[in-house]
Length: 182
Image (tube, rainbow, N blue to C red; front, top):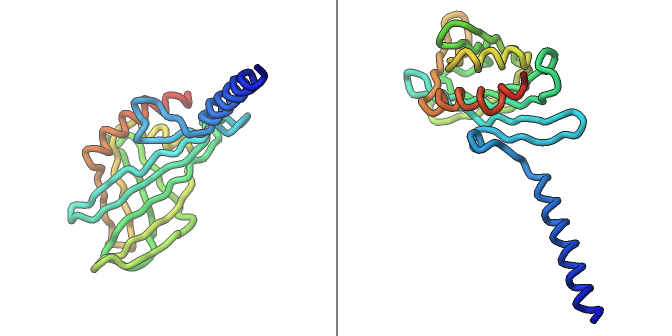
């Protein structure tokens, strides 16, 4: 008689443990599940990771950016912006600018770290990281689709426009993520 009770008790404890461990996985809302991940970080709130958004230049070169931030205080928090892009020019960019297509908002990214540079056929592939005010990113996303402008010298700049999917993603991210910050 003790054995069935022990088995039932073991199954109840195992079920509670397995159910409880499910809370450690990243969560996202249904509308943005493929666009971002949200992690609980205790008393500091949540950390958001916006998955890479795609951009393309007129000559077919690609760029992408992903963003990581916490939601403690939109007025004082910073966002880490990682940017990957291809260019036919070898050399560090002199500036990276995110500019809303509507002209309402512009964010100048200070380049902090270069992760890598590698050769890709006749082009060079770069990955950089930057920090900017979370408030600026919130305002940029709320102003609609934006372009990435990368300069590598006085007369060498490339403009990367958002893909159709990225344009749609920006609207969904405002609803699913940035509205939570206010």
